[in-house]
Image (cartoon, rainbow, N blue to C red):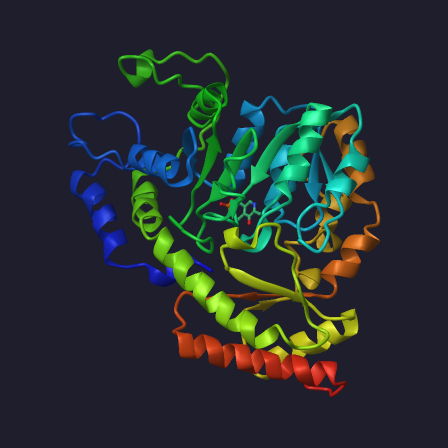
Length: 404
Ligand SMILES: *Cc1c(COP(=O)(O)O)cnc(C)c1O
């Protein structure tokens, strides 16, 4: 899964370019920076690689979501429909602009169920935010049709799916805007960073301003820039952008390794009776960063997880028990444990929506295991791992207890 596994000479070279000049900031200092503009270069490279009209680099994926929402005009009291299975950043970003996260059920794609989305629409709904979880993609045709029909914004959280595509287009470029994260465990990393991709010039211009205190970047120097809107500081540094630049040039290599190892492991598990696999809306566009599968019952799934741990096979995620990725454990959100006061109306609505029961999502997530795929395994190691996982699953399915 993560680009950090292959950090090396290319990354060091790009960082050294910046260290040579000492200009660590992405704006200004035109003379001393001697033509080194890593953030600008990376933005161009992202546009070229993914076919996006415009890209704004940002200090994190979470800040990218916040920025995209602000630039799209999502704000106080607006409802944003999101899946029950995602990273906490999704609702954090919605809350940060004063909007209301409205969680809806997922299906066996592990992404939001379009029917559940349509049922959750109210007069206050402003946007639908699919999350392309674990390297694969949401059902974008269906979601796009719903957004068009109801005049809603489509904001893709593609933070975990850099390089995934859907029917020939890269995820993140299909909605009104899309976001990437380059945090340390993502498909490509720059330590901490993110991006908003969009084909709309106005959305891009607002992202550019929002992330730099409102600067319109049109003055003869920073002091002379105008500030048409309020903004914040979510800038990326040149050092971070430099690492990202080296990594994006290696994305094709990372994806090829991931997909190869993914298919080797899939082939070891595919014929086990009782194991079913995550539905991938466009299998050719999967990044292969995880192999996600289901067992028939929660009990068997728990036995399998225990069995994998007992056998010393790491990197298998049971999101149902994870504190960060599934609504069942978001008690801080559901109890309103916020450090600062929220507007009463916002708080009431958030508590209302996030305290619903989600038996359909529970039934899926409680039977799901996601096995992460390393870039470092050679073919024999991947095959060996696949065989070991298969062995544990077969024992569990045969009713044998594999771990105390
Ligand atoms: C990682 C992630 C984010 C946030 O990215 P950061 O760069 O860590 O802030 C947002 N959404 C999803 C689905 C993620 O996995």
